[in-house]
Figure (tube, rainbow, N blue to C red):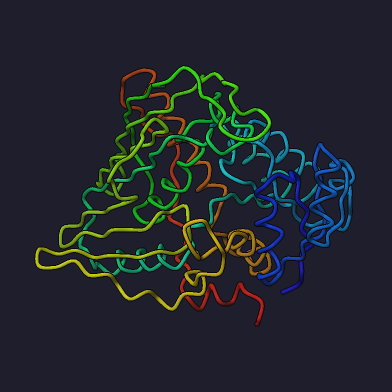
Length: 377
């Protein structure tokens, strides 16, 4: 497989993870970075040994094959469109876009240009989640009939120096954190058929707790407390709690209830973690798969964790070489956007909302397939 030159637009905090982890993967040559603030791009370029460019020069460069869109969600559509118009493959941070109409416009543009679009999250490719997929597919808990997923806390205003956009339309816990949970549920269970939700904002303002703006309040103009029901085409029904208004709770990140046993999954915001299977007789922690994307490799405030961000991009570029579908696909990302925006619409209307999109489950990523994405050594 040849090395593809990768550019990045958006030099914020998340760019460090891509620049650090990209070199782990075959086919990825982290090459250039651009930002609307040239000094921020230059700092990242100096730190990681890539070239700082203007956005215009990066898009015009004949040396760049694909571009990662790390801008704020409100401009994801515009930036990804510009990447495609420049004749380059695009890979976007989550969420891909903020409306289904934007997603369909990107689908049409990508088809017209003959280019690929991929989208985070790729955490579902992690060892724990792929082990769960294999167990479910093998009938290890029977037919999945129900489940729960919870994303709950008090938001990020305590630590984020500029949290404004999290509390504006396009932000909120469903669009910010929902992609991790909903994408994992879709890869485990298949597409969603309809949703219903209750949604509100418990607090009209938030107070910034750190940085030069500490003590300043920001308005809350989007729902921050959402409780949804997801009805899957498979027949499974899932309760999803997504709230930034909760001080503490004891809910697990994700549980699936099968006809024969239950499965307790780790946080889908991460690649690894403990997987437990429970029957009437016992609850056992499963021996982790020997999966390369389950190996702890990154320091985190909670301890060492598995972090293989760029796995989805690497799989997309390999898929281009091999003439196959990539796993973090446009179809999957658009369906997840449809689920999330339908949840928010249901929260406004108080009615069930039927999905207008569907998608195939992405192909599983077995340990050997994951190893093939990594550079030797």
